[in-house]
Image (tube, rainbow, N blue to C red; front, side, top):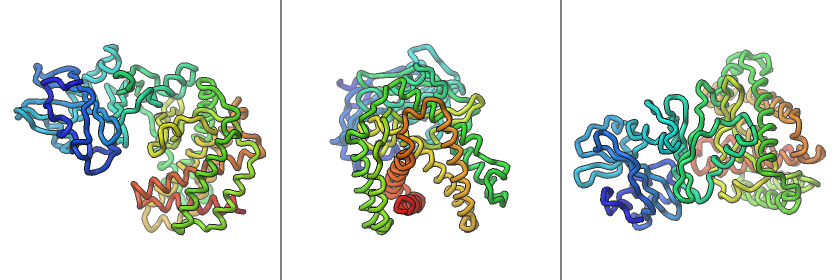
Amino acid sequence: MTPPSALPDDLAALVAPYLCRQRWYAGPEGLDPTEVEVLETRELCSTGGGEHHLYLAVVEAAGSRYQVLLGERPAGSPAEFLQSHGDSVIAGVDGRYLYDALVDPELARELLPIVTGGVEAATRVRPMGVEQSNTSLVFDDRIVVKVFRRLLAGRNPDIEVTTALSRVGFAHVARPVGVWRSGDLDLAFAQEFLAGGSEGWALALTSLRDFYDSGEEDPAAAGGDFSMEARRLGSVTAQLHCAMAQAFGVERDRLAGGGWQALLRAVGERLDRAVRDGLVARERAGAAVARLASVADPGPAIRVHGDFHLGQTMRADSGWYVLDFEGEPARPRDERLAPTSAAKDVAGMLRSFDYAAHVALAERGAEGEGLKDAARAWVDHNAGELLAGYLAEEGVDALLPPEADRELVLDAFVLDKALYELDYERSYRPGWVSIPQAALRRITDRLAG
């Protein structure tokens, strides 16, 4: 589609530097403007007496598609919100300036009726935290709209899975309110906002701080014991998997027919890299993979959350809720959507407990060195409660491997997750590499016996 005259003809060149400044941009740092193509533009609405405009632009840059919501104001028009969002200014051209419209409360407010087909409107809007790949806006503390920045062809997994789970009666996702699409692209998703909810990550850190302050050796004896919440979260996780099976079906032979061997090959290759880098002992890594290869039946495969951790959960008055079904951002799309063992999600949450314990230790600086045994006790205590709640849920047993292989299958996915974390931390958070590195040594030592 040819850009309308209201937007400059050289929009692609103007957008290129802006893309490179954004957390959600996944391409090369030095993006050549010739690598940017404007695929679609249209005006969505105008406000401010017709002088403030909201435009949609879909662009392709370095092989990926992105959504850019553009605000436009006349040069000299006041915009106090830009004082704290300098990176959101795109360009000044022809007596006006362009910027990221989602930092403009006036224009962002207009997005809600667009996403919900005119069903909902709001008087207030605010951003919700900082996200790696999307932008979420909260309207009147009733509805949250997730704007997808990097666009994927076909249904967005978060929309697909959330609506399917809601349809089969799973009560632990926020109610869908509206979907905004353009052709085969999902642009935004509106859901009920869980007002007053607390993120699982924050609750776990609070528990850990209380435990470390208490001087107790037993986490159950500390005032902020997390075990009851961990057990409830385990129960909700099992209910999630049963609902996934109902909504998307169960593949009984997928893992046994090659999926399990593919996982072991991938784990073995990444372990070899860790061995070459001196992070894991070679004999321990080899023995660990050999032990995992002894699994006789890895169990059925279902659609899973795929990136399940404490930050993807919310504790509200009515219980735990599960958020964000897009999967691990560093994995290919096809891999994120493929059915796999329910153990993948359980492993992700167990690794999240370990991360929380180490982050709470790091907060204490040098004092944290003397609390490593306490951190391990907290993780083991709450991991046990999570698994107890999970296994007690009716129906989940049919989605798991036989008991003889169950622990090893879970170990395989814990190891896979720790290796994924190692690659991620090396690329984005080098200061956190020690967390998955310690986990790798601990897991391989246990498997090697």
